[in-house]
Image 1 (cartoon, helix red, strand yellow):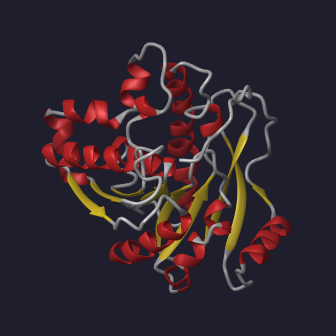
Image 2 (image 1 turned 90 degrees about the vertical axis):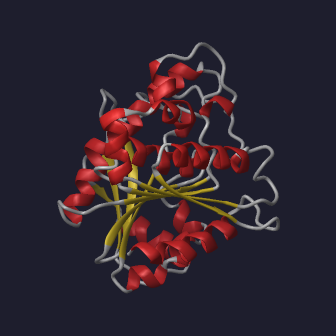
Length: 288
């Protein structure tokens, strides 16, 4: 995960934007910058965060048909990062062939997990607003754009890998498959301080997965599939701790009988976009 400075900006501070807001001129500029031609169906919308906030977050949709894929950027990233860092091009054939529709969203990390001046419980509580935005605003928009019966794939890289896996663990009814690329799945390793309570516990899959049991565990076992991918090269262990926490996460899931595939890439595979491009292009065709 990339380094991030402290932020004093609250999720409640930015003005509300009308919903949805389309940006065709901006879309064209970003598409040209990334080398995408006008044959790509690309839409940029701003969706209200809600939760008493006047803020809106961005989502960019690519494609005309196919299984919806919800994509999270790396730490504190924006919706256009997948495009600007080559991830859209990496799966361009799937988009053009109508096998997937790709929905890239903003993160809220700068106000939640990357707000290191806040105690871990408050950071987790703020993350709850992001989760509600996904479930109450983003997913309904995607379902209107595809099908009410559509089953999403969630994916992301670095901290986005955490978001993808955590979202599917919490809502496998919406996204029964998650592909985490170089994720760190233990928020207690993210410069955590202060006392933890319910918000931090339920936002940390390495803490709550070992305690899953009963009907809820049975539901996850019947519904959920997770694919955890990570390299063994530069920055995958230090400072990100992605390699060790990915191994731990895979073991916890497998111990609970939840479908989980662990894919370890080589010692030359670093924590970087060029490898995430290859990993997504390698695995995503299996599921669409």
